[in-house]
Length: 192
Image (cartoon, rainbow, N blue to C red):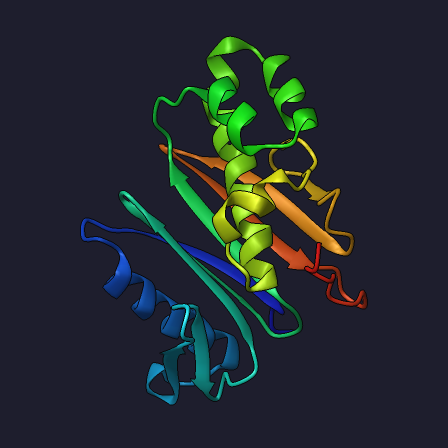
C-alpha cells in the first residue's frame, strides 16, 4: 500500500530552492508511481508550493535552511514541515518574546545545554503548524499557540490546534518538525 504521508530530506550546498523543487517533484512522482515529468509545481501568491499534474489536490510543504531541504507530501490532509540549522540562540529571551508563557516555563526547566535545541524544536513545531494552516506565522501571532513540549521522536498533539499532530526529530546539525491533520478529523480553524 502506498504511503499517504512522505517526508524527505536532502543535503544541499545552494540556497535550497532548486533542490527543494526537485525533491518535491521526485517525492510526489514516487508516491504516485509515475515519472517526475508528470508532476509540476506552481506557487500561490504567498509562495506556498502547489502540486499539479498527477499529484493535483495533494497537500505539500517545503522548508530549507543552511545545508538541508525538507519536503512533506500528503495525499489526505494538510501538512506542514519546518527545518532549522542548530546554532547558538538566546533561547529563554527569544521564548519570552515570541512564545506562550507555558512554553517559556518549560524551556527554563530544561538543562542549560539543551535550551537552544529545545527552543528550535518548539519554533519548528509552531512553524510547521502555521504552514499546515496555510497562514504562515502572521507576524508572530501564531507563535503564541501552545504546542506540546517536544519529545523526539514521539508524535504529540498541538495543544492549541486540536486535530493536529506534531513530531520533532533531531538530526545531525538540524531540527525537523512535521505537523499533519489527524486522519478523519476536520481541519482545525485558524480564526483566533
